[in-house]
Length: 82
Image (cartoon, rainbow, N blue to C red):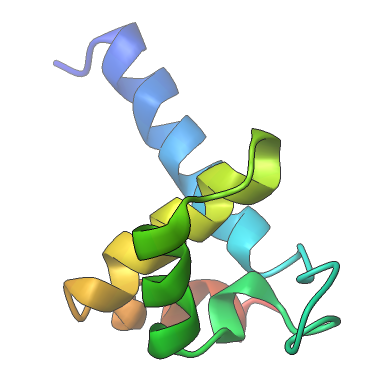
């Protein structure tokens, strides 16, 4: 049996993954590039120097964890739906 909170958490996680394919980097060398398409070394720089506040920082931190753990394949099914 799936508990409602587990369903909500799974939906929230998938919504965050979807946002990685919608939100563009607003500034810097990679301005205009989707968060999901940022290179690992750039994400690593943010991890060392500090992520910005708000949604952008959350998404960059999430993408860093995905990249660092070699999980970019999680985004493939979401990209196919575009």
